[in-house]
Length: 564
Image (cartoon, rainbow, N blue to C red; front, side):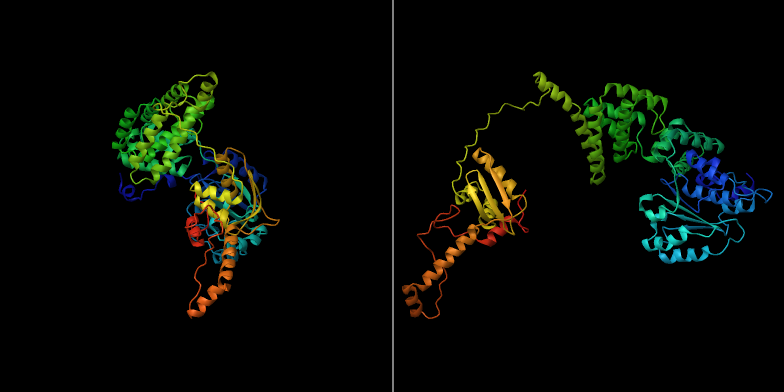
């Protein structure tokens, strides 16, 4: 190497291979065609919004549009073109981020209305040297509501020399009033095969030798993002330290499991072989695979097998799949049914979230694998139905050991009165429901099998259903329990009891013997009155004190709710 090359700073692959023309964009053919036709025909919108996941080229496309609008050609006489020359002053200055007429703003860090007002203030001035003044606002969804409102009028009627280009990953967070004033372009995820070819070409230009399975692992990890793929390739090159990049190095770098080992693990689990499956998992963990990543790999592989089963002609859709993986997948999918794969998917999906939250992810992942292995022996719902219809018992759930049938519960006689109904709940140890019936409802109508009442303010929601279900079970007959809003209702049993107690108190105080006693003992008061002749309610024994309202409130809970 010469001295200049040794001191030149390294540029990451994502910047080195950033597209500078529409033709260099990969996986966005529809958008490129539309933009090229609009530029050729002169039908240029005054505002564009570019949306898509991270790393698919939104900001890069915005800069290419700015180049295409301002390119003057190598001879300086050209106009807007879908194929910018890349050599004129405007093309080079825009590519180097130093053109004064192309203003880039990061809305993630400049979200306020003052930032937009500053931008709007500069809109009225003509470009210094370019044909158009282009404003590129990245992550536009981060702008505040006031900032969007300040931008609306200028966005609707901008000067002829101004173009706006917005980029966002969250298009749903951009107000409709803004979207309606823009021409929208959706940048797609780059499919696996296209990204695989692109990375292979870049590796060749860099003089890097990389194995096919290593490249496919990078493609899968990138999930359609070109920038992520190039960053991972950069990392893999550094990880290999100048040698050939092998699949195991990339797996170590990403903390992934080998694709074929994932297939082996899933096959062992679906055969119900818990011990071999745990042994494979131990090997993957010791090799550096993250427990959550192993479950996610199993989840992804299950999805791919299900898709392969449902649409075998589209086997390579959704990611980069090698010929070896495809052959293994077809063999596995032929042995499995969609119901089994669906059950596997559900167990793994729940297991991933459990493992994420677990104190020890390894233990949580092992429990998920054990659960999946033992679920493999269970018949599917369709098999159980068929077995039941045909009279077979082999697939039906069997008791672990014979046990005597439980004795049928004695049917409760129908309560003849409402008071007897309340007493029934107390005798069945349903104290909370009995307290609600006694304290929080006013009787409208009662007959054995039918109860209508008006709810008091403390009666909980769902009381009717609870009462009806229990009465049906206890009496063996169907009950009608209904809460009504209108009609005359008797006071609650509690209110009736309190009224009787108050009457008894008044009568006792007015009794001559009590009056004589009060006169004999000045300052004495009547603390309690008991009418020994009055019949008890709620099925209470005469010696028991009446139900205390505070006790009832404590039984119900802090909000008067029924226990579950």
